[in-house]
Image (spheres, rainbow, N blue to C red):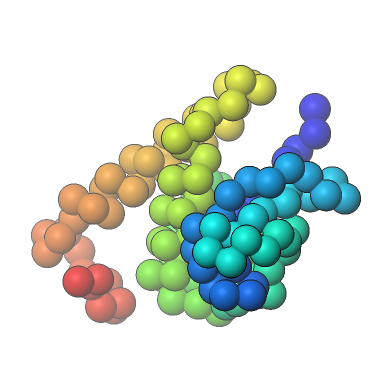
Length: 133
Ligand SMILES: [Zn+2]
């Protein structure tokens, strides 16, 4: 079984449009088409941190590291790490592919995290990071 690491690009490299549609594969990579300008591409310019860093952050989170620890290691704020995790969960969750059930456990944990972070507004321990919103 091949481990597919198709990271959805953040935005179209040409127009920065964020509505991207799967458009088959090219050179073993997922190819994307921008709905705004119609351009097809297989990768975007790294905006912010590279996809590998985000994937590692997700893996570290699943391994039990705190978002602060992950953020320090990646050189970003804990909020950025939280956004990566949330995005990761949103991308993987809606369409569970019938390839196996092992990944579902990770997703489930991530969703717990997402819901927890949504629910915690005000109560709980304070962190040095400013609360969002
Ligand atoms: Zn575009």
